[in-house]
Figure 1 (cartoon, rainbow, N blue to C red):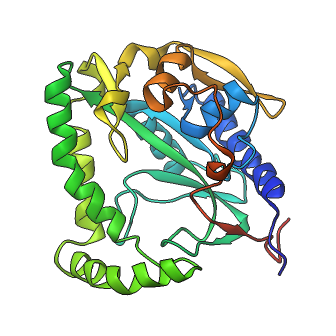
Figure 2 (figure 1 turned 180 degrees about the vertical axis):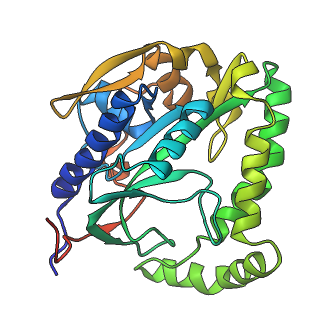
Length: 272
């Protein structure tokens, strides 16, 4: 089966983002474009040319409402579903919205079976930067162990060598720590400071303390153009992008203009 081109993959991802946005608007849920998706909206008014994923942030209370609404009601289109972030064998401490029309494979890590949109919960952090850094440092062990539990190989000679060497770390982590425990501990640390009571907030999963911004920013939203459509983002997107990327308007060198996901996307045989 012929795999989708990067542009075809981006068009399919746009469908996921459109479905997510529809559900959020219909149920009054707040979210913001995030990471490379937010950067793409600001710098390119669409996808970063080499990007192959979509990310959004939701304040923890909105995130929990979204999961509850989707889990209890028939609100998603027939081709869509969400993963579980608390279930047995999960590798991710956040949910993904899946589009079953597009199976995917990943050569470098264990991945979900379909094209996805990442939905990251934003949680509270201490106002004091040093205290916040200490919290993120404690989380790092569980972040790394969860990452190792996703370990696989890459289609390259150096990837194979990394696979052979890393296999023993993978096996040990799986046997003595486990993905489920790692994800549970990550969520425990992330929710130590309730979002509703915190002046500052940040993404705990894969994030850094330096990326924290005032939690009230996630209440003040605007619309940004993305691939000819309008999606929600925090009004102070400049603060978030600066904390994340620094000089975000300057593209990286050409040799670094490539995706880190390496996913291969295919059209489903029975796609409607």
